[in-house]
Length: 146
Image 1 (cartoon, helix red, strand yellow):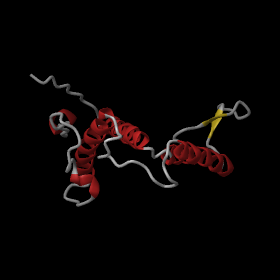
Image 2 (tube, one colour):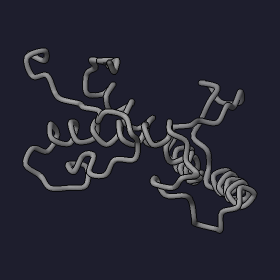
Image 3 (tube, one colour):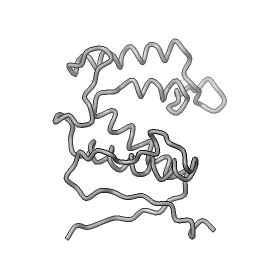
């Protein structure tokens, strides 16, 4: 018998889980530029004891330097500039593929709630399977939100 785990969250928590799963699978593919994007947006902050809060958003020069170092890492791992593994690559570990599959079903549940009836890639859900695990599911429980 396959054991299943059920997690209940509110939408902001589901979005955080989706984003974390997406980041994990992208990093496993070698898409380290995602870190630079997070730093640029302020999602990852710079520790700086010179400012009142002790942290700040990286400036453009810092982001450029970090992005350059991340490109170096990508090259050290054997990728050409701008390339990475695909989600279906045999080089990816099972956890990265599982993260992708769970992220896709959570993304669909969120998209269907935020924009019902729309037709975007977020509404597609899990179209292609990359693991042998039972398909993950994610649904919105409207009764619990009332």
